[in-house]
Length: 122
Length: 206
Length: 105
Image 1: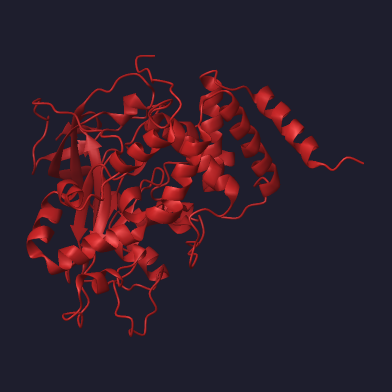
Image 2: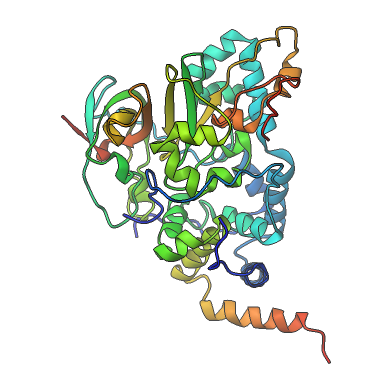
């Protein structure tokens, strides 16, 4: 497995520090993202049998990038201890009707954070 | 979420005790750390932190602008970031827009800002329906959102955590920042309630 | 993983259990499971590995368990997979503790 942990017992002081500062998932990287704000994108239709933060209800659906959050470690590979695979995360806006059909309100939207690897251009 | 398949509490308690004693014996966990963690979430970290952020945004328009533009650094100014709130996005309720936070895949929640999530936020009922029927879910909380108001649902599936900046109620113009903070409820900061004046006929949910 | 945890859009999972004046933990074991898990975050297991571990609970069990039962499942699964603890050690210790709790006749 590529990702090793320290396997050190957490002291009370370390617990206190973790509570106060947390674990940053951001990565400083000049690497540009595959997409930009305003781009129309499709969430990939993939069925990975392992860990993923791409829920089924958005797969295959078309949305719009509304914000580029910057570069973060990729949970889908980190959760398998394979790789941190840093990449851009975007807030993607889907019309409720795109996800749930004509019964949904034409006014409502769903916003979800998706990674470069979750998206394809249309 | 009661179910006949659940293990009785006494069995689980014994199992947890066994694991705890083994992990201490093996030097994997330190009982002092366990006490620190439980004490922090039971006594120090909770929705009062988020309420301070909201009240400050209501009285300080420059802070509010910074909060909406970059939640993480604005909240860091108040020293309120922490575990599971490392990367924050704040979304504003207005007369035209109502925001609702959910995590469909597990129960991601801004722990440092709101404390640990309530049972309803972690429930299968909320996780499954908040995205497909947000207006129905809000009705279950006693909140009817008019058709002309847009409902925005935020699924916190990645490493960003969300906080709703609720609307400041009318009639609070003379209140101080700390008086305002005392009005702000946890549910209002998730989007399942509005902030009410104490005299309001609608009782505030916890 | 197309598991039961990926529940956005599912129907028939009941009314939302709104509890007034809810305590942070409902019992001591919940607090202990939470804190023991927290104490492994980063040092022993990346948080995402813990999330994935709870998703690997068999679907029937996942849907009939409470929140901290799923945390306990994830903690045990990772501790045993990484050879930090065995199921037989847990069973043995449980038996010892149960015996210690029983007043001798």
